[in-house]
Length: 211
Image 1 (tube, helix red, strand yellow):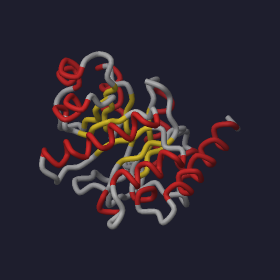
Image 2: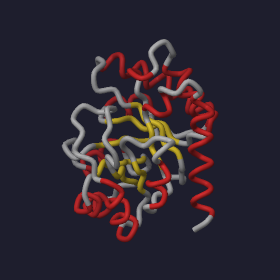
Image 3: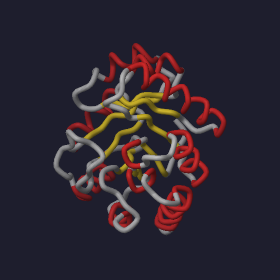
Image 4: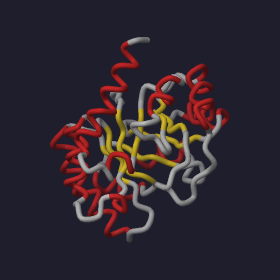
């Protein structure tokens, strides 16, 4: 997979009154270079509809589309990849379904899970939640920036920090060694989505360039 800096996940509960495509297009224009559709409440039919809309959008901008959990939907719309949690289908089984050329990301909350994901062939891992977050109902306790430091020292595949990350605390995440950031409510719930994304990118680029 191509490298990325800013990863955005859909969160329609945070942008009432704005369409999914409108919000995610503004994020892409602002610098988001990977999009994940995460919808744990809608019907399969509705998730498929949203995936088709986002597939058209991401194809227009040449940005990868990742589908959370719904492997069948990912295959149906020819998404670029899937993202799985610790309780989802095992990575190797998922790989048989989506094929060797698709991206597979895995959520991890401790170094043992990160090691296993790398061993099993994950293309990237999510590292978090770094801070407390309201973007997910079944969230585990915050892992803090210490987990970033552990992953930075030991894991060679790309990792993206996630969970409660805002413009006001992203420097803590970057200082711990992260170079890829995922935000949900801070992006999609922003009054100026494009500007918020640009500010995230500026912070990431500034910190990475000094290393």
